[in-house]
Length: 270
Ligand SMILES: NC(=O)c1ccc[n+]([C@@H]2O[C@H](COP(=O)([O-])OP(=O)(O)OC[C@H]3O[C@@H](n4cnc5c(N)ncnc54)[C@H](O)[C@@H]3O)[C@@H](O)[C@H]2O)c1
Image 1 (spheres, rainbow, N blue to C red):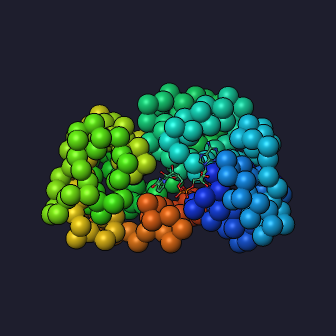
Image 2 (spheres, protein in one colour):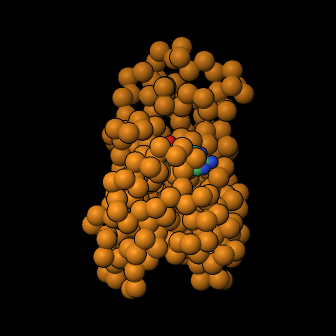
């Protein structure tokens, strides 16, 4: 594979880890690293540290220049970035998966145009088995997420329902519904349910339960998949990333693993 120009939009926790991995272990595959973040201090820091990196003047420039762009910003921006990437026939790796759940036609358009859209497994396990099980037929997919109350602070759903998250003293189910509603209710917290929906039976049919308790110190995701091939149960106990406690460390590592796969000719797992 020829060397690629890699773009990174959002140089926070995940974006900067990917920039470092790209300029480090994947350097043989990279001809240039084009960065964009609304906060110029983030890009300046990386530009100083990584000789292959330079800062673009906006997100549009990244998409126009890069062969593969990494979105590591927010669900609301992800939607627009994916639309532009597909229109420009540019590959894109999307972290804020919740942002594209309402635009599934983009995935079909990308396939027709030969554009790669990469959606890393993120903070959950079991996506490999789910993809295989789906071929045989699925009956149900359910995600139960346990979180410390502080990690959902500021979610639109809490305001809408008048839930005072600071006053939760015991294990409390704060949401029970499908993934389509979960992503709207907790846009920054529940990307995993979006990914699960896309890999499995869709957002309307994927069940989601969110439970909070002051006893929980980390995010725990349990997935139950039932189908023609049997039952799959996975449990992922995540450690928060030091740079951004709202993001699980495994999500950062999953993004690096997905980028490695993009360059690798050997594929391991489904
Ligand atoms: N798929 C998953 O399992 C998973 C897991 C964790 C996080 N995420 C998602 O990945 C995304 C990034 O997470 P993170 O931990 O790196 O967050 P972060 O807050 O550390 O980084 C986000 C960066 O985006 C920048 N930014 C904000 N608005 C911008 C704009 N309009 N234009 C350009 N840059 C802008 C911020 O300055 C910040 O540097 C989030 O949307 C998060 O929800 C996905």
